[in-house]
Length: 93
Image (cartoon, rainbow, N blue to C red; front, top):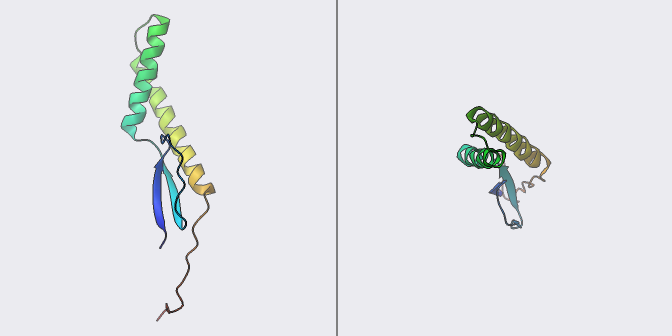
C-alpha cells in the first residue's frame, strides 16, 4: 500500500513527496475559512467606513468553503495515482 500525504490548500511551502507516496489535497478547515472571511469582511467594512455585515460574512465564508472543496476535489482527481505493485510471492487463495 502506498503512503498518503495530506496537504492543505493553505500550505505555504511546496511538498516533494517521497517516491511511492500519494498526495491528497484537503480543503482548509471550516474554522480557518470562517476566520479568513471575518478578517476580510472586517477590513472591507473599515475601508468603506461602515459596520461589518454578518450576512455578507456568512455568505462569503460559504462561498469560500464551496470553492475550496471544488479545488481540492479537482486537484485530487487530477493527481497521479500510485500503482499497486504485487510482490512475486503474493498469491490469492
